[in-house]
Image 1: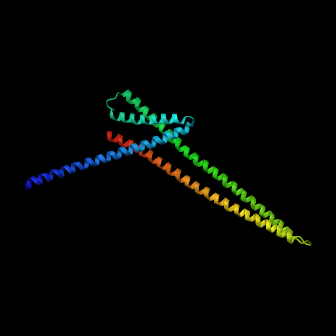
Image 2: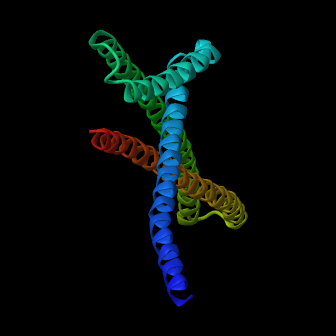
Image 3: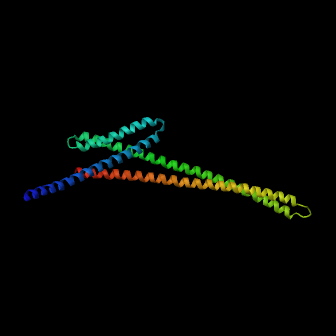
Length: 233
């Protein structure tokens, strides 16, 4: 009985030691499959949106065409991988050139998406700078008005032989009222400038994050293609 228990225990140990690498390989295979599909999906999405940007007059048609080409590219690559040795040289060459051409279309679409993102940021920045410049010019004009009023007050004060008390008081009241209005405009304009600058920082950070994510996805896709060829050989 002791020998039977030892033998059965050894058999279970060996079975578990064999089963564990199999499970790990299966999990790694599923992880690899999920990662490859995610990268391909992200690249396809950016490519479709980018091509729609180039041809906005027929956006729906371009989306259908680009989506079909992306699916066809993946299916063609998978077919070549499975039946490479069984396929003739002519068919392999044709399908390989087709895959390269579809990869170029994907790259063009991704470039279009990145160009769109860059143009949006540039356009928002240009509009924001125009608003800031307009507000600064308005502040400068109001400051010039205040300077002119102060000069008039100073000239009145320097006049002799005439009772200018009432006139001076009126000019001071005008100056104070103008200064109060200008100060309010300055505070409002400064708040708008700060809001615009904060929004620009948020937009630039968002676009940088999107570009970094896309770069990482493209690099992972390229690296994954090199690993697949290596395993096949």
